[in-house]
Structures are given as C-alpha cells and as structure tokens.
Length: 250
Image 1 (tube, one colour):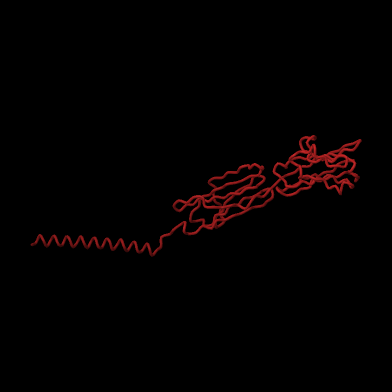
Image 2 (cartoon, one colour):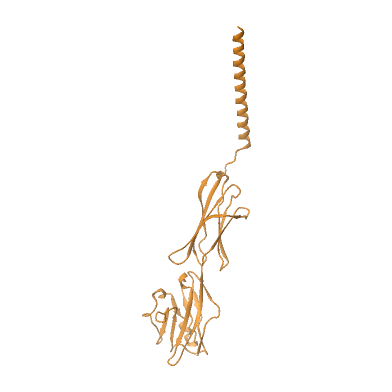
C-alpha cells in the first residue's frame, strides 16, 4: 500500500479546527495497522493508534485532547487527523506514518497557520495645540500584520510610531500612532492580514472642540474694542493737552 496526503499546504486558522488528509491506497482497512502522526520526533507523536487503540502514553503533551482520527472511516483506509484549537506553533510539517506487520509508508503534509486579530481599539493618546496624537492597538494576529492610516478624505497618514510584538501564544499584537490636525477629523486605523486578505478597521470621529476656531463676530468685537480704546486714549490725550494750554494762557 501507499499513503496519500496533500500536494498543497493545508491552511489552518487560529482557534479553529483543521483536518490533515491521509488515505491508504488502494483502499483497505487501517484498523489492524499502526498509525502514527508526528512532527519532528517519531517517538513523540501527536497521535498514536496501535492494536486498535489510541495510545496516550507516548503522545506529545501539546496535542493531548486536541487530536483525533475519524475512527468510523478507518475501515476504508482514511487515517486523516483532526486537530482542534489551532495555535500559531502548529505551523510546520506533519508526517502521517502507517505501518503493517510487513510494510510501512509515510507522507508529509505542510500546515500554514493564519489568524485575523481583534477589531482595533482606537483612542486619543495626547493633545497639544491644534495637534492630536491618535493610537491604535489590536492583538491576535498571525502572521505579522500590516498597519496603515487614512484621514477623513481617505488620504494616507504617516505613522509616527509603531511596535509589533510577539505574545506568549505566538500571535502578534500591534500598537501604532499618528499625529493629525484640523485637516483630518476622522483618522482611521487599518490592520491587514495579507495572507488571508482580511482587514480590520476602526475610526475616531474628532470634534471641532479639539480645534477651536475664532468666531468672525468675536474677532470683529475685539477689533472694535481696540479701536474704541485707541479713540478714548486719543481723546484723553487731546483733552489733557488742551487743558495745559489753557493753564499756560492764564
């Protein structure tokens, strides 16, 4: 017999379930065979089926409770592995190894892990004069995401600071900042998983309160006030000068 897998990489989404295909050819029962799924070390299998039983003593701890065969399909030689709750660390090469009393075969299957993170949290980070610093953060991305900013007119904004860090679970978190002014009242943060071609967006609607403008009526009032003040000063000056002249004449 031979063992057939997949010529194409298998795409696995973080937190979801994936099936790694493996089939005996020609079709025959696999119930009397040893089925071993492993990655780097054959002695540390993700799943081991032997003597019609699932053997857990040798199983890699990282896969306990997360992997299973389709036992109802073993009769037709389907030895595919179901893997639940995908982690970033699950990315890599897997080996499906099937052994009978007189023969063994194996095939390799590549798994690519991807994950689209949380909706970005966008917030006002700092405010000075007519400039504001806007922040955007999100987590749960794999692989490393791409971050861009646009203004209310869909024009690109320049990022002033950005950090992308690997979390304990192997996923990526991102923090990004832009500085904007009155010309951009709706900065929008876009975080994209280029592999899945999925984007998460968040916008911040900025009120004119942050960018106060002087009212034309208020400006006119101040101009008039200055003119009146000057006129009063001139009047006082002229009055005092005339008073002094009268005193000199007397």
